[in-house]
Length: 336
Ligand code: MRU
Image 1 (cartoon, rainbow, N blue to C red):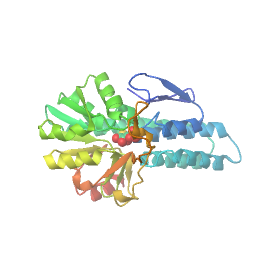
Image 2: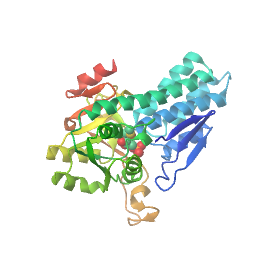
Image 3: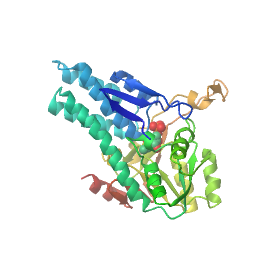
Image 4: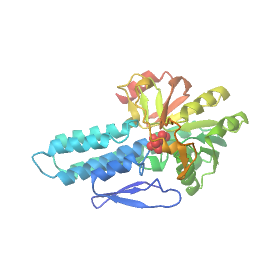
């Protein structure tokens, strides 16, 4: 399963706003439209946003061409893409990497395309490596709880949290995956349940507010989630609701893991307090499937992410292996 393709100088995105009802691929040749696709969540998930931004910069370079204002125009395109979604650091990581490339090689389009493709391929490899590393943590017959979608759809392919689940499933270790529906945009119901069912990995869908009861009944052996940005001390942002799950897991003595590639680590932030958390439109929570569910005029608060303190994490799963506390040392060593 994949959500991003690059063919004949064009970017194709699987429209994730339509899943699972419809599998519709959209074609992009204009980086401005790609920025809009990130904003409106046609493509979403931290690594997938980074991969998409890489291709968007290749599209920008094609449009701007060998022009005296090439560098200025590229910086403007980069700024437009950087203003789409603030939390996932992979977006900024990929844009910086593309900028290093165009500053070194100028308007050399094949070089920029190759860099974008490299970001994409490396992401898939990192997911496969972290899948193998994370599968070691999964016991035989495991019942695993996950939140949001950290799968092939959220990455270049294979997935981070779902990559761990895929690898463990291929070793015959997974007896059930519980997918939180993930209000308000239902990435767990629409995307994770869909992705796992397609791969014939056993999955049960639950509402977010059922996770505690499920744990209390002894039906969860471990929790594994993705990550949008991890600060230097191991605090991390992920889809809203992750923090509540981590607290619940701690209360019930259940191991709680996050899986992430190195492109999701932001050592410039000492702790999670500095991670910018995106707030989205109130209509996402005051209505459901187009119908109003909350009374008019009542204020809403709709943060798309929350920050889980590192003390609640059992371990961090990366492409280079599993990091255990203290995370600060492990993370800085990992990136140097
Ligand atoms: O708002 P989204 O759908 O982009 O949020 C996605 C998540 O929170 C994922 O868990 C995270 O990006 C990790 S994806 C491998």
